[in-house]
Length: 274
Ligand SMILES: O=C(O)CCC(=O)C(=O)O
Image (cartoon, rainbow, N blue to C red; front, side, top):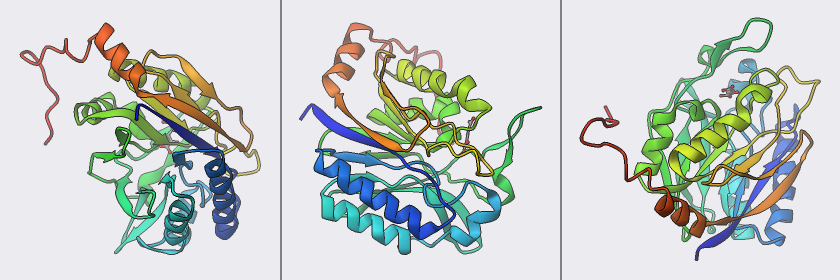
């Protein structure tokens, strides 16, 4: 199967965790009825993006949100990249994305590797490391269509990581993210285009809807970029979804016509895992 449908759910984040879960479940049902094979939620879709909330909204693996999402994947027979949520593990909190298969079984989990500690003069400041710990696993999962790499938001800024995903077979890179009103307009689209072009892979970014009343305003603009670097679809700032076809023949065509992955001078340089 060379084609499949991916749904990007740009959900609004409310203060109420259960309301966020219910909202996600109803969108999942709707896009599944429309034929989506893989459904993606945004970063921190069930928790306001604020370090002071992460512990309270967090849960251990197999908690309340986890179970509801696993059940939704099973009921709707879809793959679910369950956005991210704060994961409690002992005294640590991670920003974690779970992946469920069509039977609702967890097939992967990615803990955000690069923590978003920034301070832009006159713009956005944030310090995830005040509360979060960073993950250390590089995440590629298998589907009946292709291998898919998984990053979380700030992870996309580190080109070596995307390249490793592709070296491990990924043809699509999925990124639940929540850029803000400083870095979103400046870098969001360009980063998804860059990583798509660098790696001749589809890149898919899924963000929460914009909410000016929240402490951290998400840029929205969920996006899909083809391996040729075209934006194949993009949202505005509002809550909603798009369903887009991913055509793996395009990955093969671009990689064969412009074979840059083959042209890497492995005899001169390489990316090494520590
Ligand atoms: O890289 C950026 O500009 C935004 C990153 C971010 O918001 C995050 O990692 O949560």
